[in-house]
Length: 391
Ligand code: DOR
Ligand code: ZN
Ligand code: ZN
Image (cartoon, rainbow, N blue to C red):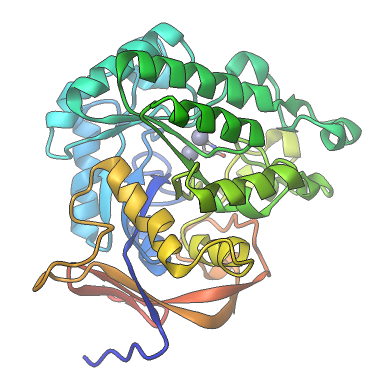
């Protein structure tokens, strides 16, 4: 096969620290096979599959199942994330050591979907993961401040009659966890940062030597709570879409490095869970196939990030945070390539029905976006070329 890369940009394969693949349990919305295809089409060569499946990935049996299925599909490296607490209930630590020692070699733990809210459990989890050289990825949401919350707390939600999700619900947990992580010298990763106040907290924590990293989603880099008008539940997500000024601060913080990387929070949902009343809809949106284009639109085109920076936020930093030695870095001589070739001049129009995911809940429906993934290669094997999965 001859591969013509004239005019294309070569980057290390993308690494997504935050993907919901829904298998086991909700294979009607996504499977490891369909999610892997979406990832490869988006330029990814590794994804971290979140633990809020059914059953929850809180033990070696489930994480090994996800790991094995990912290998069978073979399009991207699927790394299972282990739950921090049994059943995501927040009461009792899961067997983190057993999951770390399993075939899946779990190095990232998270109760994402829910927050590890109890400070004592969180502190013990941080101590435990420090001993495993692992990292906790925290969905930062103080649950007592978000009871019934439906949208970003502010003037718009109030006018539309939607109960508010205050910025402080996120910021207070991030501040607390940074203090705990510093105290026990553990690593903390903050999921989907959505407010400018969280950026302030991270800046402060990093300046005092906290081992903290943070991700931002493509949707929080582009969309605002203006999307609440019309009540289309495709725009419902946790944490919620925030304000124009939050979006601007998130973009600048990512360019500066206060935010380390982009992670999709790819969250497929069934039609009946989105095509309903706002209050009944599930939070979450697709992200794997649109992430690169949103980064180009929000950061590269406005001149905040160059292609070197794209490699940093989509690949190098996430690989470092998760401890992947063989991704997100330049190739050694003779090493099979794990890379993505991007056409920076091409455009495409997003159609949810045409994405590889089983679900179609993209908030970018009908948008014309810049940059197209031309080829994705995993250890020398072409997984995607010219928009098609090579199985
Ligand atoms: O919007 C979200 N969807 N946020 C989460 O934390 C969980 C996710 C999901 O699992 O659907
Ligand atoms: Zn989350
Ligand atoms: Zn998530």
